[in-house]
Image (spheres, rainbow, N blue to C red):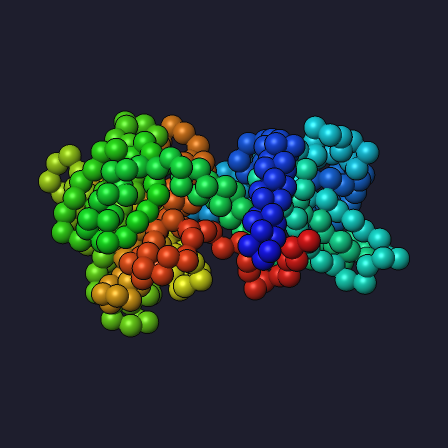
Length: 349
């Protein structure tokens, strides 16, 4: 009887899941597009609306020119029809002094469409709402950005560069899902470089390694020095004296979490010494505990005539798919861009 009941429950769960997928459309809108649902006068003229707009209107860090973090759309609660409910990223604002005693951000996934994130910010007053937005600006930006990156990771799982995957396995005993157009490659000692090899809109992935010597390994100065030595040796320019170099004055460094483990992020600009080439890059440095190595995965872009936000975010999303040997052996770690943060409370509802 237990076997039959278990089988029946599994069948019902599958039917419910399949029914949801059949009934729910895929969320609409482009990546990094956000719909704000708020009273028009509040949105356009009052501090509450302007504070949320200023959060979403921030620039993407580490790019050579100003590019917005998100494309912003707005509607009032009365205008939120069946079509707008399908937006991929929705932020609704609920201000009511009779119901709420403090400001809180909540979210639900797949509310009206598959792959949708629906955020509600509840507050007792416009003043507290505006203050919350100002204090938690980075959390809101990071949460939406990593939500989009996790959508990308699902796509990369199905369609990724076999060249990058095979080289990562061969040289580093790692796995990574890079954009499938990365088909050209170079392999050297402790180094791989894959690229779409186009004259414009060039995107590239590099992975390299070096010994781990303890926490002092993860400093901005050390990480940049290692990057410059690796790139100088492996990515030369067209003539002698030309090589890739890091613009250290425009490079930011911080610690992040990847698959729940420590990682060190560099983000900034690169250029070719004695040449006019340059562009943005982002890298993750992580420790391979099985061999006491630092494994660095980096995405960089060369696209002088194009906006670079979309290109860079695709490469950054790919970095979160890097699986180190210990993670592959564990078999229970899944590639994901961590959407949680200690800077604010976000409750799943």
